[in-house]
Length: 149
Ligand SMILES: Cc1cc2nc3c(=O)[nH]c(=O)nc-3n(C[C@H](O)[C@H](O)[C@H](O)COP(=O)(O)O)c2cc1C
Image (tube, rainbow, N blue to C red; front, side, top):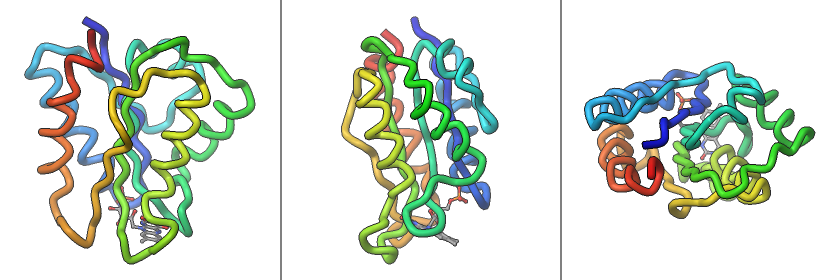
């Protein structure tokens, strides 16, 4: 069973809280899991399975704690060679075109790095729910076998 590396991008703590709730669920399911909030490219290369859980800030921007990580990945371009990944995007549809832009940027990059996407981008709209973990935890559970096999 592959272990899951969760890369959490958060400004006010929502996405980080969701990442921690997902970690609790994964461990209860018997999967090993680590949450990174200040990751390096080496953390990414060592990951067996990648789960990005990120909010969006500014106008479609990646939160500052993952900004450098994202640009380092762009610059060094460590190919994933079919490694499974999923991306969860927390956003707010009142931002219009920049809705979930942070998650979308990661989803595009991981596809370019030739990871194996286990699903389409999973978007959670703050206009619709105040408890994103209630949507994200069950969703990740449905992706568990794809992420870890
Ligand atoms: C200053 C600011 C800018 C934001 N910009 C966007 C945006 O461009 N697109 C979007 O979908 N959501 C945007 N959001 C909404 C956040 O992504 C959303 O509230 C999310 O749940 C915050 O999670 P966090 O606490 O992990 O940062 C913005 C929120 C704030 C406060």
